[in-house]
Image 1 (cartoon, rainbow, N blue to C red):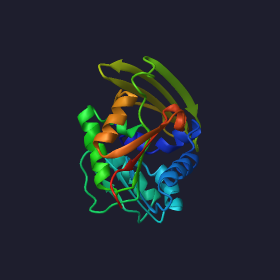
Image 2: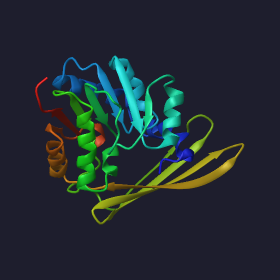
Image 3: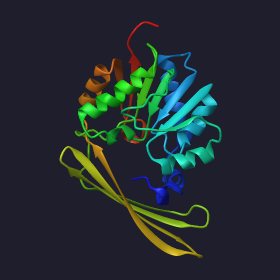
Image 4: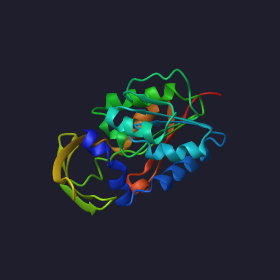
Length: 240
């Protein structure tokens, strides 16, 4: 998943499908500061190619990113030269410092396969926050709102290329499997095709709430934002 073929043009596809990285980063920052007005440092977990992080850097004094896919991280490093970017698993990382806020966007947390893994990840986030620190998580689709068999398709034309993207998502046990077909064509190389597959756990809204509480957060949920999946905010319990 998220291999070198996709990493090259990942952001262009989503931007041309309507994803507003600047707008989302501004909104999440506003929500973080509604909980922690003096937040000055931020860690982006699952930062991908750094598209959100590029804007968070304008809004916070210190930012870092962590990403599992080395192919995606290589794009982030080119986009954000000199930025502290780390390769690692959201379930078990240790950056040996704390941040005022941690974000995990675009449904990345849905890659946790079990409730235990979700709790592991959120507990790891909590270790990197002070009491009063804030976590902002965009979930994958909830089990109760998931549309089985969903199909989407787009054709975009960034630069000199034409890119067709067609996806199909189906229920598999307690999760969903998304298969995405890409066809990329340009006048010099012709057309090529590749496929990517992503699996996500279909947690319920209450399972997210429970995992946040187990990790030591006081959770809240904002419905309908960020493309419809909503946003969880959690404030780490304890005294500053």
